[in-house]
Structure formats: C-alpha cells, structure tokens
Amino acid sequence: MNLRKLTSIKGQLIFLIFSFTLVYLVITWVYYSFVFHLIQKKEAVYVQNLLFQVVENIQTSSEDMIRYARMASNDMNTQNYLTSDHPLESLESANDIFRSFFTMTQDSQGILIALMDNSGKKHLVPKPILSVLNCLEEEYGVYHLANDGSGFTGAIHNMYDNLDYYAYYQPILDTRAPAKPNNQIGICVVVSTLTRLEKCLNQVETSPNSIFIIMNQEQDIIVSNMTDEEAGSQIFTQTIQTENVASNTIQKINGEEHMVLFQEVPNTGWKVVGIIPINEIDSDLDPFLKFGTMILFLLLVILVLWGIYIFRSIIRPVMQITDFVQGDAYTALHKRLEIKNNNEIGILAQRINLMLDKISAMTRTIFQNQSNMYELDLAKKKAELSALQSQINPHFLYNTLDCIKGYGYLSDSSEIVRIVESLSQMMRYCIKGPDVVCLRDEIHIIECYLDIISIRFENRFCFSIHIAEESLSIRLPRFVLQPLVENAVYHGLEPKYGEGTLKIYSQTPSGGDVFLCIEDNGVGIPEEQLKILEEKICQSDSDRLFHLTPDNGLALLNTHQRLQQFFGQGYGLHIESAPGKGTCIRIRLRAEPLP
Image (tube, rainbow, N blue to C red; front, side):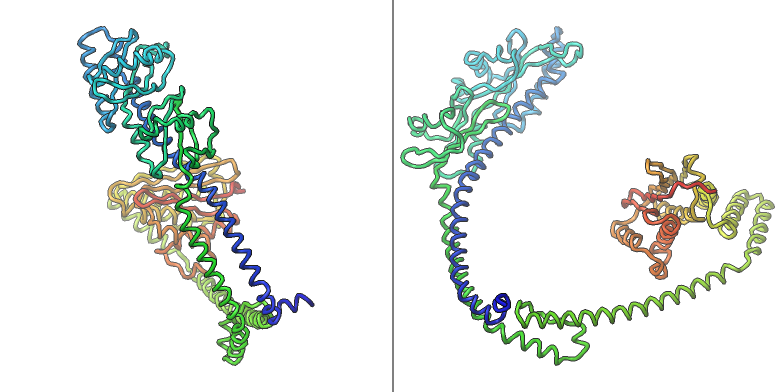
C-alpha cells in the first residue's frame, strides 16, 4: 500500500519536494570529493608522464649509439681491417669502413665512431674526437673497461672544441670464426656530444620551473636543465641525492612543495631525477573547479525546471491517450503510445501497447501463413513442370551426337571426336546416372569437361587433379562438382589475361571429413560481391532459389543446398577469394564410402 502511494502521481510530487534538497547536496559533496582526488591523482600522473618522456627520449638516443656500435662491430670490413696484415687489403677495408660509418651516422648529428685494436692503438679516428678519446682513456680507462664488457661512460669536457662528450664502448668479437665465438679483436667506441641529451630534456613540454637531471651510477650529474644558480644551490644538491629520497614523494625546497621522482634509464645505468613544483601542476585545475561550480548551479536550475515540468506531465499523457484512442484503427495498429511514466497513466499506456502488439502479431501470422501457402503451391507447380520436362526421351540427342562423331572421323578431326565423346559421357551421366555416386565418377565427369575446355581455349589453361585414393570411394550427390568447375573457368580464368591454372585437390584433416578444393588463379571475386554471395549461402533456402539466376550465384547456392540436404548442417561450400589473385572453393564432405 505504501509503495502504491509512492508511485502514484500525488506521491511523486510530494517525494520530489523532499528529495530535491538531498539530491543537490549529495551531488555537491560527490563533485568536490571527486575533484580533490582527481587533483592528487593528476599530480602523480603528470610528473610520472613527464619523467617517462625524458627517460624514453634518453633511451632512444642511447639505443641509437648501441645500435651503431653493434653494426660497426659486426661489419665484416671492420673485422677484416683489425685482423689483416696486408696494407692494401687494410686500405680497401678502411675505405669501406668510412663509407659504412658515414651511412650509419649521416642522419644523427653529433655522433662519431672510432676503433681500437687489442693493443689500445686507435684506428680510423676522426680528428674532432681524437682528443675526446684521449680524455676518455685518461678519465675512465675505456680500453680496460671494454675488455670486461660494454657500457656508457660519464661526461667529459674536451678542451679542443670546448664541448662536453660521453661515449658508449663495446668489444669487437670475431664472428667470422664460429669455433672461437668470444675471440676479441678490438674495441668500438661511439662518441656523442651532450647536446643530444640536452635535446632529450628540452623536447619534453614541462612547467616553467621544472628540473630534470641525468645522473650516473656514482651520483654525478651528467646533464640537467638547471640554471647556474640552481646548480650551485646547496638545497638542490641535497635533493638530487636520490639514495636519501624515496621516489614519488613531496619535498619542500625553498619553502615550496615539489614532487620528486626518479627513474632508471635501461641499458645505461643512469637515473633521471624530476623535481616539479606542486603549484605549477595544480594551476590548470582552477578553471576546472570553477567550471564544476557553474555546472552545479546549472544543475540546481535544471532540477527546479524539472519539478515544474512534472506538473505539466500529468495532463499531457492523458491528452495523448485520448487522442490515440479516438484515432482510426489502422493508425492504432502501426503506432504505439510513447508514455514511460511509472504511475497509473504509464500502466494504462503499457496495457494498451501490449494489447496492440498482440493484435499486430496475430495479423502478421495470418499474412505469413497465407504467403507460405502461396509459395508452397508455386513450388509444387514448378516441381510438377520439372518432372514433366524430365520425361522427354533424350534418345534422339545420343543419335545426333553419334552422327557428329562419325562426321569427325570422316573429316579426320580428332577435336570433334573428343568433344563429342566427352559430351556424350556427360549427358549419359547427367540424365541416366544414379542420384548418389562416388567421388571417382564425379572426377571422371570433370575430366571430360576439362577435355572440352582444353580444346575450346586451345590449351590456354593448365589443369591438375590430385585426389587421395582413399577419398575416391566416398559418396555424394550426382553432378555437384561440374557446375563449380565451370564457374571457375568462365568467371575466373576466361576473363584473366594470359594463361591460367585450375587445381582440384583433396584434404583430409583429423576430423573424419574430407575437404575438396577447387582453386584457380583467375580474376577473383570483388569484395562486395563476395560478401553478398556469402550472405546468400548462409541464408539460402528453397524459397530463395526461385528468385536466383545463373549470373547471381544460382549454381553455388544450388550446390550448397544439395550438399546440406544430403550430409546435413555444417557441410557444403566455403568461398575464399581476393580480386586479382584467384578463388578457392572448399567443399566439406562426409567420409562415407559408397556401398
């Protein structure tokens, strides 16, 4: 009883007054809670995304240097140069190496490649980096480091050009001798300016006071976007000691809160430290908060207007039902009341719609039954006509073919004799053959047909038939394969320019069924036409076949339906085709031998 009062029109109006204030307060509380959590989440995600972009840029740059080192180390010219004792051969290898190095690094500014042999002697070193290699050897001992493996060095300052550099070193192993896979024959050093790393930092769109620092394993700064004042600040120096600060934490620097994160760069052993002011992260959320307040105010206005609309909705549904009932019967059968109120008026409208749905369903059933009876009568008449036509005695056709065959012998025309013999066998098989045959008989008829086609097209096409011996005895309906072969010849191979190929072969997977494939390399079937044909095959029934012609898939649909009626659902045709590449029809047959 209380539920009826609540769902009545009067109960809804009373409930609206009491629930209005509660809904508004709940929405306001939910919105501000959502914004608060969104700000916190955005702070972490924003900084992490920035740090990830920096790390990704550095990783891309370092991977380029690693790739250049591997390419240079595995180059046969490099290995021949380092192991050759003949000056002329070494000179030729050096020329090839210069061209190879130039090709690798021509799109990467600031990268140069140098080689060292096992004695530490430098080879093919460009003049700009000769002093850089000397500094690397003095500062880090690159030669001894490379003997233990590959890796990156820290930053060094070159007095020759007043630029900062870093390098990647890798031992060169002799890959030409598989018996000695770890035979080291030299060292490859890829040198790059720190400008590349600075570009990695500058490519990221950051807030004005964001700081990113790249550090090596010894906590030495390799490069950063700090100003000279920030670099000399004791506070920032303490902050970047990442072993004392946990990642994704908030630290106070110069009285302001900063988000501090760090992340390792793969393949390098470096770390990237990000220090971003919190106020710069939250600044773009102020408009969002103001916008949300305006939305809440608009929501309040909308709720008031909706309350006014509820009063009007009482009269309007009653007028709709009155006009609908006073209309004509035809309109009532084809239209419905669109009233979705959950009150007495809504229940009345639902009952009227339900009654009209039942009347419409009964009317459609009557029309459908009448239509089915008409089509069954039409199918019966067509079957009777087909039966009468099949009773015509084809004996005169055989006599006529014998006459043509005799004329071929007299005219010494072997082509006429072959065509007539093949055609006679096909006609006898089609007219007097049993309804159920073995696959061997179907293949014989296809061979007769292809013999005629070879003469007709002057051996323009190449045919091949490969059927497993155990599959030749399976049973199937008579004359189901020849129409598919004929389709392949006239719709696939004949329009093709030049020679064509038709393959007929069997497949026997581990399912107990046999798949017979008819494949050609003809012009194929356009995508739209193939889609329409597949829909017709999937939806084919006896009624649809009356409306088809040979040009729009009658042979395919007829064959598919005959196979399904003979073997059951799941059997029949599957078409695969691509324009310009050819068509393949896969026929699924049950592996049952003919008794």
